[in-house]
Amino acid sequence: MNITKQHLLNEYSLDDKQLTQDTIGKGKLIEGDTLNVLAKIDDDVVNVGITSPPYNKQEKNKGWLVTNVVYDAYKDVMPEPEYQQNQVNVLDAIYRITAPGGSFFYNHKIRWDRGNMYHPMDWLRKTQWTVKQEIVWDRKIAGNIRGWRFWQVEERIYWLYKPIGDHLVGKELESKDAKLTSIWRGVPESGRKNPHPAPFPLWLPARIIISILGEDSQGIVLDPYIGSGTTAIAAKLLGHKYIGIDRSEAYINMTHDRLDKSQREKDKIQKEFDLHQVESTFKERKSKGKNVGKYRYPDKDNEEQMILLETDNNK
Ligand SMILES: C[S@@+](CC[C@H](N)C(=O)[O-])C[C@H]1O[C@@H](n2cnc3c(N)ncnc32)[C@H](O)[C@@H]1O
Image 1 (cartoon, rainbow, N blue to C red):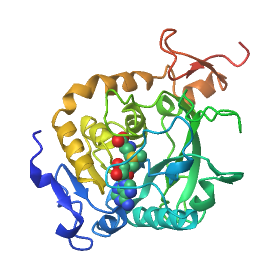
Image 2 (cartoon, protein in one colour):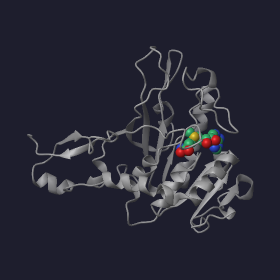
Image 3 (tube, helix red, strand yellow):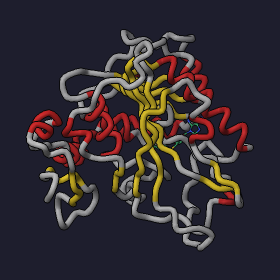
Image 4 (cartoon, protein in one colour):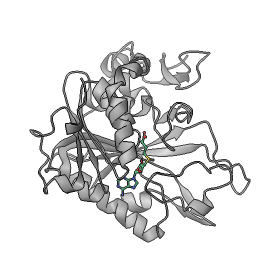
């Protein structure tokens, strides 16, 4: 698909709730403040969302080595209570536009202001979402190599769920997806490959979309802080529609150009697909008494994501 500039909108070109399932086409990229743009989207439109928001890292306290995370058109500095309230407002706006049964995956991290820890759960509990799971993303790299604490190598990904009625648990994942476990290992995207200061690796949104939307249905995937467009690329390559929002015109244009050349990134999606394999389903495993799984790396030369080895209980 050739993306035309008609896919590009901004927060002033839309009325409230004007963007609907019928008007989204194959996808939309919208420049503007995410809270203002979310108001332009109709209720219950999105099936799955994935994002990494700005972390409010207070430029001067970022730590020794993290000098390169400087955003276009934005300073990552807010009084912390204001930042947390803004995130609650954004998450509640996303809840409104998500269809019941839909999910949102929120990547964040534990931060400290001198001795004081800020944990994402501090504000997630104040939103309307049901918090379904905390996934640990082992990034295998530390951003601040001082000894005030053990080096922090992980970030978190919160799986938030919008229930259908009062059924808070939702539908079960397939075995081939659930076996990827609650710890995801993989280094962040290299700055040499992507000029954005903090991009996702493509496998991350791909894993979520494959696991949540499956292969048979077409869904609408949202990233309210789209940056260099990684979530939109994954959605497009997996056959879904996307909504991407960013306040930086430069990043919206970057996403637009990357979508145009998305076929070049297809092999990374295939690599992720290859991990979603299972020898037997939950039911078959249970009938054979195989209820326990052990960890191994699928490929000795590539120690990125460990997977569960389907093993007998006692081996
Ligand atoms: C951590 S980056 C997201 C990177 C993205 N996951 C990727 O793969 O490239 C956060 C993005 O949020 C954008 N941003 C910050 N504040 C915003 C706001 N209020 N509204 C919309 N976008 C915002 C920044 O411009 C930046 O591109």
